[in-house]
Image (cartoon, rainbow, N blue to C red; front, side, top):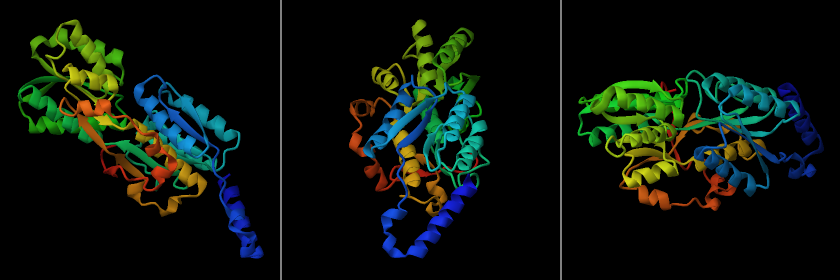
Length: 360
């Protein structure tokens, strides 16, 4: 398919040379995608609903349809969905895709390249591959948030909350996911700068609220008063920890941190039942991923013109605490800010920089 595409391009170029400039620019214009394909982990969480909303603003603004594919975090299901789309013929299509784990990322982008399509990915890039060295004609960019910064800032907030001394417990996400590794790196940096704060235990909660609640129940029974704080790598597990602490009358007494900045967690921070969470713009995540895929598929951007920092980057984020949570709760996204034309002015306007080596 890729070979046919290149041959077709060469034929078009030859025809253009033969007929000269009177053929007109319109005859050479690249067809605009009529559909943007978006892969998400689930449609039931606030984070993914906001990702979908962001991608919808881009699709609506260019008159395209947004098709959403949910996997339930099953990479094989996303693989089957992608295969079915490409098998029907999808050369030049625009994909904003969530690899459910790093084990699937390479296969997704290589399939997109073989099908002549273009793809951005969210979150899960394995350390050893990048958009410029793997399926580089199709893999436009990988877009994420800085988990090291999230782990560090939440860890230091916990240190301050417990007076710099005491044991905390850690709810860890899916181990092979880069955000899980990054948030652990950040927390360990905070612990190294707060030597009185020690880690009593780390358990894998796989990002789930029920898992977070069950694990925290066990910690309360095992450690009692030794448990001074809970560091959860995402808001889902943090909500589970808060639920377990509430059962024992400990909510607000044992500080809990999360990451994502979901509205439920922001409300708990306001009420004092949670300490902090890293607020990320999931609407922006979905919008930028969709806009970059559309830009390349429509010919507005050329992959070969992009620098490495434009192909593997973090978006900005802010730690939510009691000091700034009111402003976050009252803020409402303006759809116009997420239109394709608005983002096209500078797709990287809210980039925090290239993802560094060694954190994935």
